[in-house]
Length: 433
Image 1 (cartoon, one colour):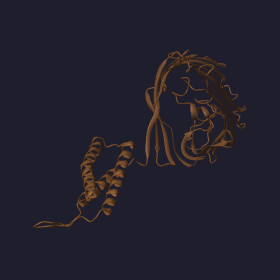
Image 2 (cartoon, one colour):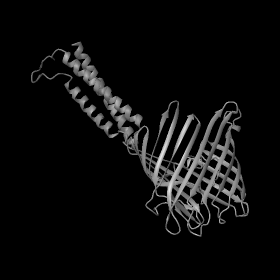
Image 3 (cartoon, rainbow, N blue to C red):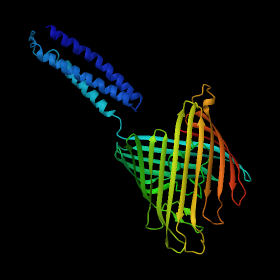
């Protein structure tokens, strides 16, 4: 009799509490059609607890003596007292199970990130101008192994708005050491453009001449397929990236054009980069590209590019801040043309060296937000009177409004061979989100 009394009390308590929980869960669902992972897990836990309680009730009931037969003048009742409560509990558990299944998080994940900027440029001898742009980045995880990423470039240019696809590729994670991708992707052999060019990461308002711009030595992006990954090397780490893509073509003045949306021949460009990280914060890399371009008479010329990069980032207790050192060098060589219109050796080289220091360990709060920067970059183009060798010294001072929002003030000293120098005052605000 005592066990039966406990069964009845337990069942009545569950029947009383269950509607409250269900109504509470239902109100949450009605108030917001989006359910967080934490809410889903809490609901699932409640369901498991109810299942356990139901099993305990069934077990207790099976161990209790048979319920007595209650005889009345009109009715004989032989049904166990708690059976109706158990049926009700089962219905509530099934209802809760349905709610839990309907509120499971999706199997895919989508994220929008990116950066935006606004700036001002005042070059010597030319008109000053404001500029602005917005670069949204779309990330989509289809499952644990399949990913898509893409970036749009929206900028004001002359009297119109320019919209371009910076990159867009599908990647498949084969294992911890191999990832395969296809589409338009940032050039792996050009370390600066692949990892440092976003304006909230780049320490200065402009980019090195040899890494970007009309006369760049290396392509900014590639259109093709790539395989990449990293691997341990004892106490150090290595990384690699290799690609095959539409190759560049050669203009009538001997320069290379890298807008390779369609290839001009059947010979694809092959390249990549291997890197070594001997200790945290320090990395060395070597990149290359081998391609074939068409000569002015239609014959084929081999083009080979070599690149090397060095990167060092350290927080120094002695200097009370972050030390950021970057450098990259590229050399391109194209076979000598048989055309009399290009009577020169078609070789080009260039690079940059950059130093930045931010005193993040200073005891003065306002000082921690400043960051002085210095960069030297140069470019030596093919031996053609249409081109001029050029070098620049840029000094800048950054102020961090937030971790991902930077005010940049810089002055660029320009030295162009056989042409008028074009020093410039630069200002920019860039934010990542």
